[in-house]
Image (cartoon, helix red, strand yellow):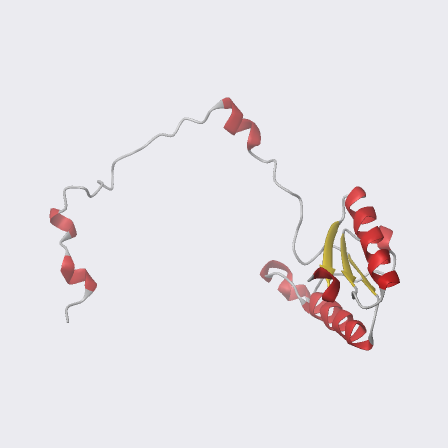
Length: 133
């Protein structure tokens, strides 16, 4: 069986672009206004708050998630052994992880209320546990 490179000859291809060909793309004013309007979220440095309701399995899962996040760091700050800071107060965090269950109705209600509150405050909210299913 032949190699894929043997299936065509790029030197004779009429559709091949010349390397010295220059193309100019003119941006519209609307496109120019969008430059630099990205989210300021930086992975690995944003404070995280974890709230848990329910069984011991949920508590274990929350500890596991918090541990992974605390150890995680993007390559650029890996040398500093940094991770996501886990904070004790919800007001100090930009990311909320709400880990709840559906077995107990009060837990589900509290999680739903906190979800709405976090969204109103502009937090990044992650619903975890069986309530998210």
